[in-house]
Image (tube, rainbow, N blue to C red):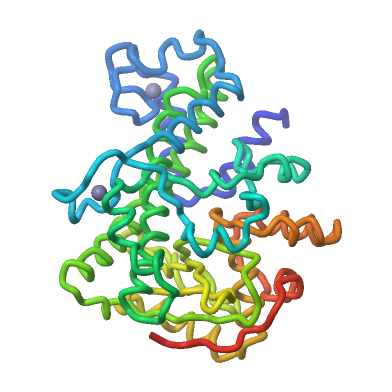
Length: 393
Ligand SMILES: [Zn+2]
Ligand SMILES: [Zn+2]
């Protein structure tokens, strides 16, 4: 088989029935679409205005892609607190995804923390991590000045105390960031569908379109899931009923060197049994939010989920009943495996031995929602301190 047919058959092997049908349909359509008919790519546009001459366009360079995507991801500006939009006060400012006052500053070295930067292929190479480190990395343009202050003032200005209101605030920031990212990803995938196959022949166009359509399906679905969760967080706030959420506060006995703000949706429980994505396309994925705070100068993590999310409730019960050492391993491994929005202390990173750096980096670049992975002490053995308490709130 030549390279193209080999790639085609390996692609087809991974398709579900619906995708296979659509792809075959596209191939047949592509060979016979008339100039004024709907394009074979499912864009809804007329063939003439869509794919008819796409092969004649100039290919998009990697540099152009990078520029366009970072424009979409970094420059989108709106206030996420739409439930209270009458109080919005412009400008939209660069809001920190991780608490600035206590969390970032407690980890920073000369005003800087470490993070992994994404590029088109996932992340930058390991060698670039050190150069890609700056405090601004934690900023997103997802809140107006008023709401960035108002919604989070209790946890910004005061020492974190374990109340439902404070857990809500810490977790809502994580949920809004996830929403912002997914919203940008929607725009990005639409741009990619319209541009990435420019300058390619029909067979390449078919492959590129199908790959992107699959990604589009997941991204749009993910956006629906997080929108529904965000909406329920806001209902909790509007009704003053923060008890719609359940939270845990995990406290360590050493200062922070690893922080995260993310919303996660595990497919597998810790024993490897599938708990979500069981085939129902209408199913809304359940999430938990994981965010970082400090208590008495020590590291602490808030885990929150909607009470109605029974799958997550059971998932977390399974984790927590295994004891503090396991929880530390689970927590720190999940942070790198499941979250993109991770920041760490630079001295901590530079003191890791090469093998550890590579293993943690590999964990961070692998896509782990959809595969089961073993909880071990890969990361936790490098994180100072022990868990001293897990409080249910
Ligand atoms: Zn088209
Ligand atoms: Zn606002």
